[in-house]
Length: 401
Image 1 (tube, helix red, strand yellow):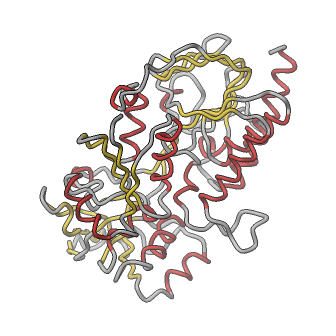
Image 2 (spheres, one colour):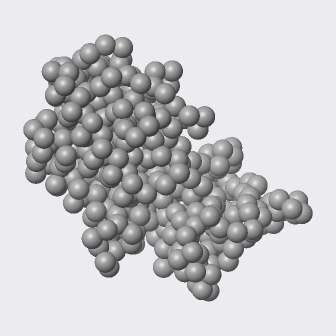
């Protein structure tokens, strides 16, 4: 049996996802919590070639990397052989309804569809639970007057979906064929078929696109403050962005960091007034207005060592003296699979028929952030998830599916 070691920390959604995948395969692993055992932190960073993000996963002497790397191996059908497990079963799987995505929209669609006796299959990708799993506290979801941790909210939705007979499985779909029924969805060589499909694939974090940002990703550059803020305890860091996520990340990072710079390209925030007020009264946060990230500074040995910003009005460039950069500049809809197949707007968001979740192919429905570039709230995503399940149930009933 291969020895599997997972370096993790408390409140890390990506650590949870990595462990879920390993546990689903019956794999026993040693977990080393670097926040509880700080003497292991330096060992992890050295073994992983300087990475300062969790989780870091090792199979014997092989360094898998983080959660995304683990799921990529699974998606390419390479993980089982690396773990020395038996060959994966690639038999076809047919279901009346398949739901792609596990955020508020996907889970709500599953709850309604399961209660309608459709026995849906929900397929989740690497970010199980969607964007809310990286949110420390959700204060505006109805029914939780004291707020609720985003991870716990999604865990509750999952349990409710499973209670009503939803089957949930990992499968990063790489290709679809919607030209005829049943629809065909492929995870590499593994095939799923369905009579109706609900797309709730959400959106993924957007990066700045700088070569230096890519070079130091996981070595000082991160898109998950709740996962990786711990690594910068007592240091100065920066957050790029001006929306609710950026300001929430900045506020959270003040729990660990000496100082947090918020870099915003305009002279006012897009975030809610409540979130802005929280930032403005926090003495550890300094806003760098009218500026963008110009270059991530570092070297191969130490990773990121500083950050250079450029003022858009004056052109002046300044080093901030920070050890980390957290990117929170919005999201891109996960619609690549459906381009040239389903209707989209200029931003590549899916566009259902007005007043419905029905797409331009009969039997295909869409909900959540994948159709919403305007509101992008958990409650609106859940609402459209409900709509999609009802639309799908009615369509299956009328079409005899």
